[in-house]
Image (cartoon, rainbow, N blue to C red; front, side, top):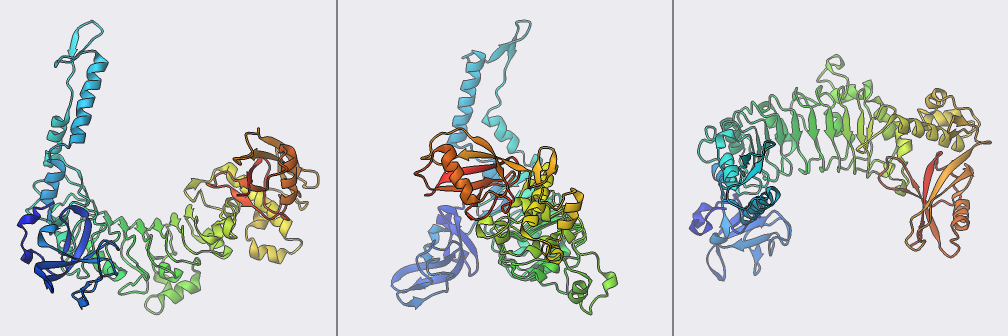
Length: 557
């Protein structure tokens, strides 16, 4: 963005963030300034953020000049091919006062043409006829008026300056954009927390700011109070929890804190075994980090205002809701149990997708969170039937209070159907062993009594529960294989004891598919993908197939 041809070598210092003069998204850190043996002039050694963006690891011809992050992230660059960045004010001017691009101009000209064509007037003066047949002038608001409006900085309330090479604040911008409330500075060259503080101080109306993809310094000394900041996004900035604790006092009204992609593995409170403060924090985003132990997450359990906790893409293998003993152990001798609060007392949304959770106990413990209504479990072994996990209807039945599962609303009808199917499935698996049932299926007795299901292995019929011995399941069979051809779906009534192997034979007969090897899928309501049913000895009852289910018939590849 800046005029790199006028930049001198002494403009660069070690640790400085820079970008390629021709590409503001190619960002790196200065690791060396000086001569390189065998080459004339001054060179800047840069360790680029993206692996593979460089040519070497910081060494040339066997001589090491700096240590790059990877074998191909370092390179030496001439001064004129690097940019130290621009000020925030310069970025605002470029983004909102710059001339319209050729594409924008072409779009504007096309809009004028279409408007003239619609009103049937090809002169410079455009008009339409009113109901009384009088000419009414039409004024086209073109790019000039739009630019004029945008150029009035004093009216600007939201600004997006992502990947523009911003490295400094520049002049006092508070009087230039006094109404600015939201600022996106993703992917710039900011690294000093004092600059972050100065930006927020000079923009007192600022409530939401995004500093993602700016590699921030470890030194946070002197950060002022960010009094108005309610939403702070620090994704992929290299921040750790020790630094979060340092900036916490500067965020008195913070409501959302986003910390994705920072390789955080531990929650490290400074003066207590659990995280304190953050009295107004409603949402904490810790997605795409390296947290493997649920005990680290329990350190967040005393945040009374916390309603949403995002933990997708970590390394968690089990979770549990802490009982009194666990809370006492967590708090240790530093605090009495009487001073503690109910763990996660206001948590309504917990996202756990793409972890390593594989045990049913971790699912059942979610019922103990007092206000939990939304959960994400997708891409965990326990929620993936293809990896031995349980299908959606079993998750719904085991989670009695959940209203949104994996981003999809659980309707009252889906909950009822799921819970009845689940009871029937458990009854088919466990015979006359109440202790085993109670241990493995905590909600079974409750659901069985609630729906009045008898012990004769009930099925779901149109009029409600029926005895399995006299009931049949209405199953829709639908061909989807490419070589099978177009065939109308068939609805058949089949015994719940029908095995998958027997169903394949029936499908071959129904659709005359003797020469094709089949594979079957159960299409679940509310589930994004059909579930493969490949155990030929399992019955429809074993699989929890309910009345009015759909089986998709495909061919083996």
